[in-house]
Image 1 (tube, rainbow, N blue to C red):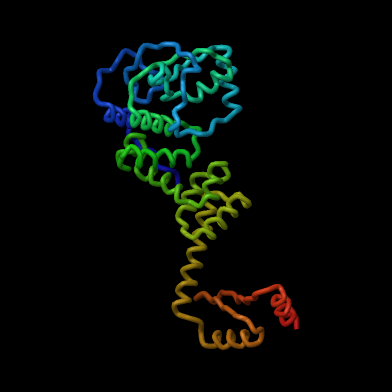
Image 2: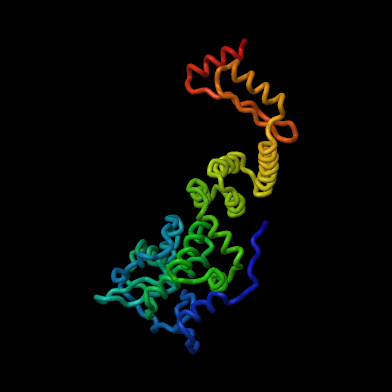
Length: 302
């Protein structure tokens, strides 16, 4: 099922406007191009690139090297067209608010100075702007988006409903992303590596049992199952589990119990018989060592 896109417009601007207060729209020439809120900053200036420090709370941690090299080559030819946004810190240094990818590429291009807008913002405002800006990127994987959502909820004290409005997404979309953080680590890794899609992840998030979750993950990856195929697999598993659980409550018929006792005496080990209401099932013969396995194998071959 495809995620329903929100029809709301301007959710991002409204969120930051509420955060930073009302203001008179400034002249476009003094508004940072990449500032999510387009709030008035200083005039465009050039800053020594070595004086700009990356924000340690920057939510984005991974940058594709090939894409950075391509941007660096473009910067060598055309210069840095889109300015970065910074805030002034102590000792005449600056902290990056947005534009880390451009800063990294500019360093690869051996630029000494970069065009920048300087604005005033406290730590919470910088964190929220950085998180929301990154959420809007198309190159983030779903886990990165989910972590950004969770940080906004936890560190910026934003309610989930307000968060949905600020990032222009429906509450259900936000909830689906947050549920990814409850998936077991191998599943999260598969999402990050692009082995499974957001649709696959949503299906896996409905499974609480770790072994079953990872077993279905393996089938998705190795059999290249589509989301539709996973949905059908889940329906079959649920029907099977329902039948098994109902059968367990009813118990085995008397003659099954008799056979179970006979098999236990014959093989000298625990025997388990599972049977669904439709008559399907299996017999499980337990063994505690390789020697016992060989002993039971000999009896089965007789």
